[in-house]
Image (tube, rainbow, N blue to C red; front, side):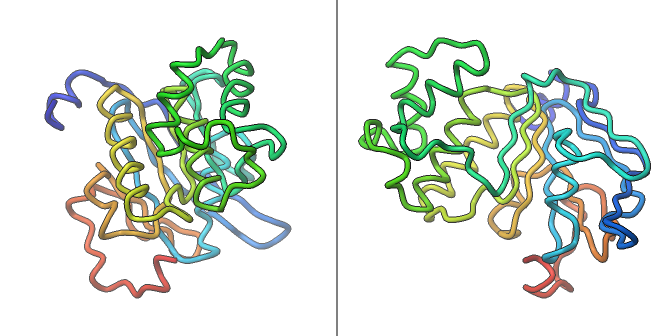
Length: 232
């Protein structure tokens, strides 16, 4: 399915922000952010450390309230897949048991085949019966991604999903993001790898000093004037 065919197959915003601002005390973290993400499309968020990227994603997920403006999520709570900086994994449970637990939280009974299939997608099938507490940072991140992919959510919110991943795992992640869009999910992801991830995005939000310095089509975004620090 081409990008144009994908846009024709799915229509309508699943997430809308209108004039969203966030303050911690008197310090502004976000100022007047307005955007929308439609079904089958993806938004990449970039910006320096402290620009408000994680705060914005938490507002989108309903985990934080804006100080001003409105955030409207047009899917049910069970249809949101959120990956933050914390893995939400249980270290004493195996990889398989973690997925079975999270499936149960969403009212699903996970078969052994389904569990092994999703672990294979993130390269962890051989570690299915190992405790998550013994995993490296990269393995933990991959298991956390498997937890999110298992939901097949309509709205996928990923905060630095490539953190700790090797090159092969990063390519797997990009493929999963692409597939999510193809099945009609709206995807929002924070990225530090502009060159590697820009092709996945339909639109880009560049946050600078709490404001939207750029919000528009990915193809029109010119990162040439940005330093590496600006994209941390």
